[in-house]
Length: 228
Image 1 (tube, helix red, strand yellow):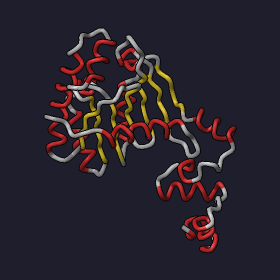
Image 2 (cartoon, helix red, strand yellow; image 1 turned 120 degrees about the vertical axis):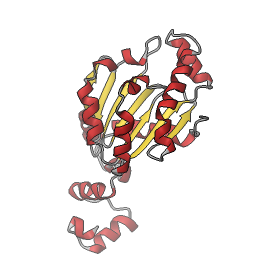
Image 3 (cartoon, rainbow, N blue to C red; image 1 turned 120 degrees about the horizontal axis):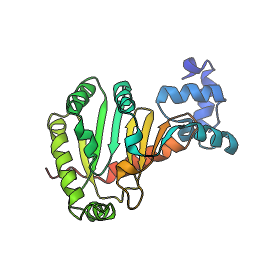
Image 4 (tube, rainbow, N blue to C red; image 1 turned 180 degrees about the vertical axis):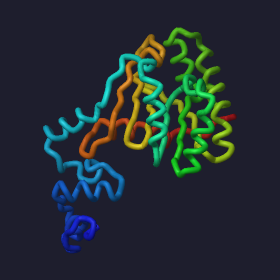
């Protein structure tokens, strides 16, 4: 760390042992080294106004509906992922419209990308309730989830992806590709395809991307393997 930041080893010791805060240029270097956000490593380092401006800059684009997101954007985000692809959905049936998706995800996994897929538990009250709220019938969404699970099962069987099922009330679907993310907000009475989407990019010192990333991790930790 001392070599990377160009400081004396004793300075690094003071950062660690005496809880001293490094200068901004050193924080950026260290955060990049350990692949963590500056706000995670030094939550009190940024002034409120600076953090607000950075967080606002994390919003790349706002789409009025999920179907407004160009297919080229989805393709680009998947293609550029090098570390992880993390998806939180109930069924995400639109993903299954791509006949090459399993092949693409398999190739990504073989290249070292960690793929995590979180689908709704088709037997849960939460899935049944969402199905009714969307006006598509109590059991319709559960059937979609089962179809999606069957679609992704080959990835799980070969170890190319880890699949879990959750029982959370889903306020938004999350599609993370390394340091970029599409957040599909959920609006009562509307199908997910008709609800807005935020395109976020993780910036050091910002809070918005980290909020959704932590939300995903919380659901992941509580989720269970699917009952195929």
